[in-house]
Length: 167
Image (cartoon, rainbow, N blue to C red):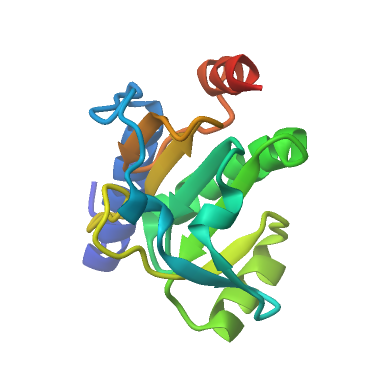
């Protein structure tokens, strides 16, 4: 079969996204308690209100580092939106990007996503990631329960059970 090079890139990128969505969930950081540097960084919400991550201490937190231009990030967004719609009242969603707010706002409107998005960067802590998407789930005691880079199905039964166990 003849495939145009630009189409081949799209097909390979899509195949890589599907592969990462079905990969097993692993966590090297599991059980590790978040250090002070992990709590001590700032962000702003889409309305411009400033927060520090420590404002959410004591809550179950779903932290996702992402970008609008990232194919694996975009691949996992529908599952995050579904998880948010089912659990947004019980856990704190922090969808973190460092892009321009207007660009992010347009992307969210186009895709119909309603989860809360924050603009900022994590400094020198265990949460900082050079790879996106990167997702960390932190329990109400500050323990890292999941830390995963790459796309994943965040609306899976495994994640739903984990979240129920933390509430």
